[in-house]
Length: 130
Figure 1 (cartoon, helix red, strand yellow):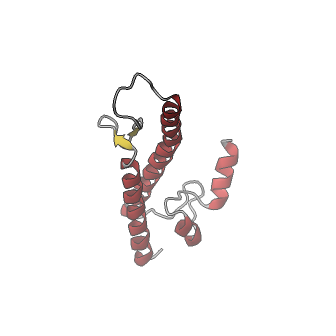
Figure 2 (spheres, rainbow, N blue to C red; figure 1 turned 135 degrees about the horizontal axis):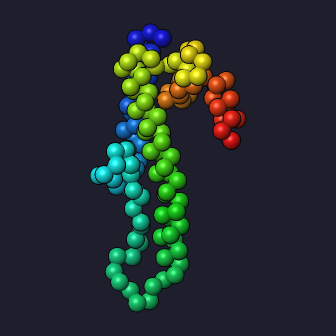
Figure 3 (tube, rainbow, N blue to C red; figure 1 turned 180 degrees about the horizontal axis):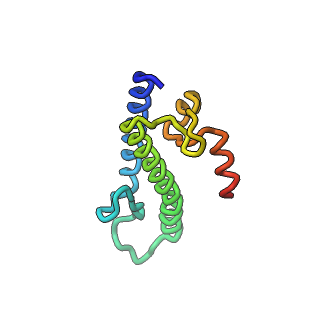
């Protein structure tokens, strides 16, 4: 892989990480105690205490929270993968499959720049772990 390709992937990874962090900020807070962890905020549609709590509104808050939890988790995992890929770029091991040590095809990296396995090894890994 040439220097231009590496730079292109680095920029793409950094931009994706920035976008994911911005998206997380809209519904979660960074956990100050755990690096890379976010905590989904519980939405409160009604700010004042109301003795006549609207159960539909409460249900909507719970639904919004439960919907955001897996999104938060998915974004955290993707950011972790991006950080690993950026470290690989820095130590000149980016684009090499973790399992077979062969180059990961550029088309795979273009589609999923944080990939750490070639498609064949990823399929084997997924099959073994399911």
